[in-house]
Length: 159
Image (cartoon, rainbow, N blue to C red):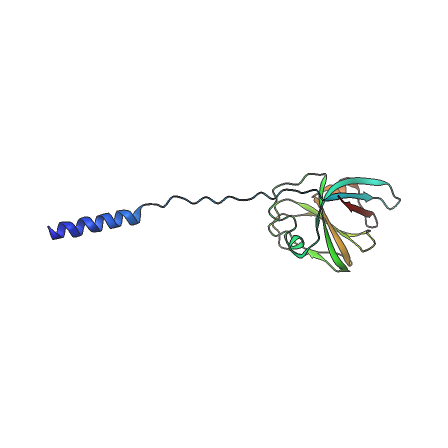
């Protein structure tokens, strides 16, 4: 009788340990665009190229996070990174899920260089060609479609 009790206890213990725990569910929060202002891109002669909704990345956390983990971006949306000073800048696409055009802008708000159609999830450095104080990110390929050039001007205002 004792052996039967030990065998039955072992079987119950083994069965209890072997049961699968219910799968825990992880809910991912979708990061969405938040319009914080309006941005305009002008040709060097002052002709308006495009008006965009803009989200500002103007503190350390926002500048480091940028457009990471966002699944989409509309052609009318942009993110402007605002730095306290002008210096050489370099961006990369780690955890960025969509292709982007990265536009480097000097302290005078003129475009100084581009990194066009940056590849999603690529960790290669994409440096500015000259110092920049601002960096504008738009949907990949739009710089070419809109005919943007070094020397074009970018202006913005907060809502």
